Image 1 (cartoon, rainbow over the protein chains, first blue to last red):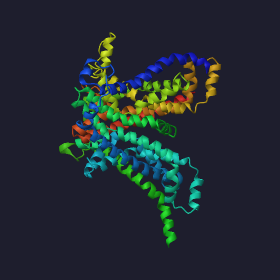
Image 2: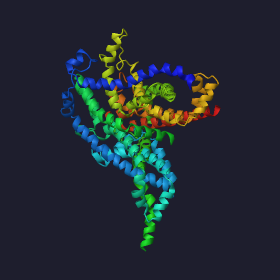
Image 3: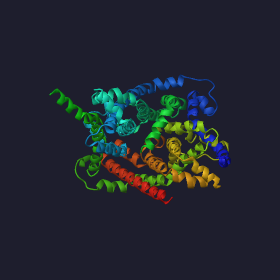
Image 4: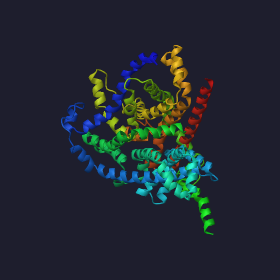
Length: 275
Length: 292
């Protein structure tokens, strides 16, 4: 492709600038989190003269980000485990077992995929309130499972379709029940997909703000992202503490991304090519 | 007896396996859709539960805030080709191995995994009137811009930040599409003396038409349903209600104004918009794909 060589070098500069523009906002925030208020007002761009953890400490304890962090961790963990369990069971049945209504069920999942949360949130909030699930962990977990289950079932079904049916047949001849096949064969074989889908589900839940705002009205039950939104009003004149709160919310995602970006990107790509 | 019971258990097994998923999806995703549509024809407050016909819809379309929200949807549709072209072009350059291409994919994708709330908070900081971006602009002699306080500017600011935060997602999808592209077609175009824009238009676009179609639909869905976090943190719908979108309107009516039935009417309208936009785009792109 030598003819396009010139074009490649022409775009090299804007591509590099765009990469900078992609990273810089977070670097800026991390830098500000290390400054004193005075330092920030005097010069916003200069490097902080020392790494200061006081601001992080303030954000974690006095602002309450620590408590929100734990709330998020609990809710995300339970949601993802349930999503993967329910999603892989359904995915196995829909891809490898023959039964009446299976294609209808798969279509129903696809249809649910196209119903955004905003469209159902009013009646859902009412149902949740009527069953006493508003402002409880199980309520929020259930809302997340319902929200991301169609996606999870869809990707798990697509993945299990690539497993040859002979494997299931062989395991059945060896005397395994259907449940045995699921537990001993399908769960282990599904590991790559479970990992990829699980990370995406975890990101979706961790990053959500609308569902959490709706389901968890009281301050002590806030998830971390709702905690970030509450920073704005309280700490708008204390930018370093504000930046520290944002950083606390961003760092776990950054760490996950650094180690697992391949799985995240693969999950997104799988969602598109199988669609 | 034991074996027949076991056989029956086996026959029921598929249903047992799908039951939790089916129950959850039907009860908490599909049924609420019907409930919501039904609910939008009942009243709020004192008229709670009574049928009011299309009153909510009349009020909705008469509300200047909802009109702004619909106007902003039109704006999003107009900006959609740009939001799709940017990741498409970048994917093309990465495919053509721009210097540094290995690194770019992971760098560009990173903001896509950050919560809109975090992105919004960071840009609040950067784009404040007395913030660093304006400080930099006035240092180089360009005046300050009221990114989030000027009703004529704020919506473009929010959409710009949304595109910054999400183009990496579409980029990954495009790159997955490029992996299926037949490289010899591009080589042939090159031998025929095609320029890069010609090669993009005549080889890449027709070959990736399915991917482009998918990105169009997902980008539009993203713009209509995942900008809440940004709006909530960056503008709260303001200034002067200029950054309302249907999803934000629904939230305000449900969460702040205690008007769930009116919110349901707005939800139903949003759902119809998404149906129409999705079908329109698919049929347009199908036609475009067929002409080649």
